Image (cartoon, rainbow, N blue to C red; front, side):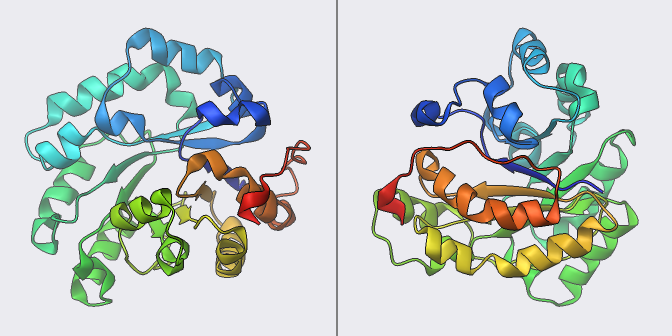
Length: 273
C-alpha cells in the first residue's frame, strides 16, 4: 500500500529558497496536503480548476469541511452546505485523499448521534476523517470506545493529532508559544478506524526534540501500511522552518516507502539544529 507524506499547506512566502513557489512545485515533492483553507473560506470554482491543473493523478488533497458545517451548524441541518461544498470540489474528486471534520473541543460524547447522522448522509464514494478534541474522547473510557466503534463501523478515519513535541518544548519563540496555545494537548491514541489513517505530527522548533518523539510513528506507520494507505502530515510552529525536520525524518520515511524520491539539496537553516 502507499504511504503519503505532506505538509499542512502548499505555499509559504519563505519557501522560495527551497524551490517551492506554486502548488505544482509542492506536488513534485510531496504526495498530499492538508486542505486547511476550506475550514475558513471556500475557493472560487476557477481556483479549484487551477488546483487540478497544477497537480497529478497520484497527488491527494485532504480538505477540511468548512467551519460553517463543523462549528457553526454543529453538523445539524447542513445538507445544503455539504452539497454546495462537495459540488464545488468535484473537479478534484479523483485526487481526494479524504474530507475531514475537525470538530471543536465543545463537541462532546452527548452529541455523537449528530456525528453518526452526518456521516451516514455523506456520499459513499469518498474517504472521510474525524478529528475530535473533547478530553473525554481521550480518556479510554466508554465515550472513546463508542467513538472508535462508530468510526470503525463506517470505515471513517480517526484523525490523530500528535502535539507532544510542541508541548514538550521549552522554546519561547513567538511561534512556539502561539502553537502551544492553539494546538490541543491531547494524547495521540494511535487507533486505525478506517482505510486511510491520518497522522498530524506537530513538531517543535527543535529538530532534535521532534525527531526523538517520532520512532513510535515509524513503527505504527509500517504496521498500518501493510493493510491501509496512511497519510502523514508534518508541522512545525513556524512553517517557514519545516524543511530541516522534513530532511531529518525523510530517510526513515524512505525506508517505509521506497517510492519516495530523494529530496533536493536544500539550503540548511542552521538556527534549527
